[in-house]
Image (cartoon, rainbow, N blue to C red; front, side, top):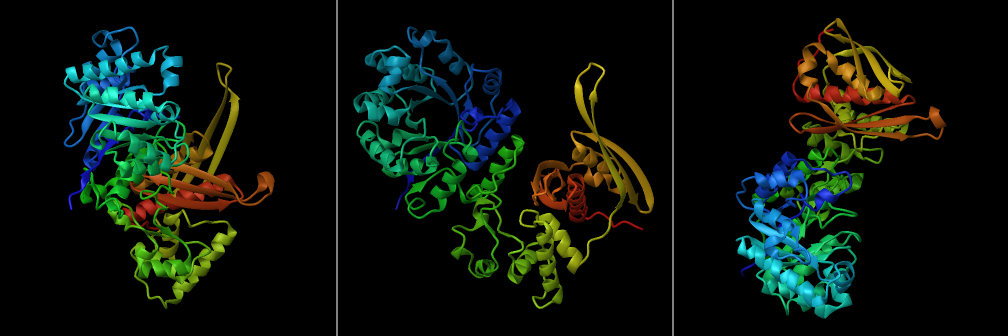
Length: 536
C-alpha cells in the first residue's frame, strides 16, 4: 500500500528566535540549518531578510543543502503599495532562498480593526503578494495567521482568505493556531471543512503549544488531510513554544497508524541522529537539555525501581514504547536509595563491569549507596560519581593527584572608579607524583575560582583537563537549618568531544560540596581518557 507524503517544515531559526533569552548568530543559524538538512527536514525557515542584520547576512550567504529547501519569512505587502514597490517584499526577493513564506490576516477582526481594511481589500492584498512571489520564481507559501480564531468568528472570510492565497499560486497554505488555543477535535473538524476549498496536498498546520497540545493538534491536522507540518526543534518558540518536531518526527516515523499511512524525508538512519541534533541546539544556546523531553531527553528511557528494572531487562518493550537507539538515545538504569540488586547489576553492566550477581561486593555496594543517599548524596542524576564509587568498590580507580589543601576568598569592595564589585579568588595546593603545586585562580564566584585554580596546573594531567567546561550547577538545601543547612551540589560538565557527565557532593559548606563534585568530575575525565596513575 502506497503511503502519502507529509512534508516537515522547521521554524526554529525564525519562530524559535522569538523565545525569551534566545539570540542566534549567523554561524549558529548555519550549524542548525545544516543539522536539520542532514536529519531530512524538507524546509528550513531561515528568518526574515531585511528585518535584522543577522537574517540579512544569513540569506546573503546561505548554507548549501542536500535535501532541504531554504525558506524566507515575511509579510504580505503593505496597504497602499503595489507588490513591486513594497520594501518588505523586495528584501525577501533580494535574499537567496528557495521559498518565501508570507504571513497574512485571515481573522476579520484583525483585517478590519488592526489594518483598517475592508474584507475585499484584504483578499486582494493576499492574492497580489502571493502572485509577486511566483513572479520572482520562488515557491510561495501563505501562513494564515490566527486562522482557527478567524474561522470561528467568520468562516466565510477565513476560507476566502486562504482561497485567495491558493488561487494566487501558493504551493502551501498553512493554517496557524497562533495563540495555541484550539483543541485537537476542533483542528480536525475545521481542517476537514478547509479541504473543500484547498486540497490537502497544499495544506499545512502551524500550531503553538499554549495548552501543551501543539504536537497533538499537528497530528490531528494530518489525520484530517493536511500534508505539511510546521514546528521547531525542541518546541522552541515564543510563550509556551511551537509544535515540537523532535516529538512529531519519531511519532510519524515509528508509530502504528502513522508509519503505515505516511512517509517523510526522514530515514531510519537519519532518525538515529535525532537526539544528537536536539542536543546540538541546546549546546548552541548554552542551556541544559530538557531531561524529561519525550524521545530525546536523558530521562526518556530511564528506570529506577528495582522490580521494574528486572522486567525492563527481560522485556524492554513492555516498559519502553520504542527502542531508545532508534532515535539515538540510550537506556539508563538509575541508582538510588530505592534501588535493588537488579539496579546495581544493570548499571554495572552498562558501565562495562561484568560482576557475579552473588559477589558479596555487590551487596556491600548497594548498602553503601543507600547509606550515602541517606546522608544526602544522590546518584540518581550523578552517574559519573556512581561509576567512580562502583569501580572503587569492585575494580579500583587509580589515584591521579591529591588536593592537600584549598582556600577560597570572596571580597566585596569599591574599585578605583567607586563601583561596588565582588571578586572571588581560590588557592589550591596539589600533590602530583609527590611534587607540590601551588595555584591561584580567580572567577565569577568561589566555585568558578576554585575550578580555575584546580585546573591551572595539574602537572602531567593539565592537558587532560583543559577542555572541560562546567555547563550546569545545581544547589539544594537538604536540612531546614537556615544558613547552617547541609547542602548538595550537582555539577554537569562537558568536554571538547561533546561528552557530558554529572557528579555530586554534599557538605554543610557549599564550597566544600562543590569541591567534592569537581574532584569527582576531574577524576572521571582522567579515568575515562586513560590517564596514567599518579606515583606517590
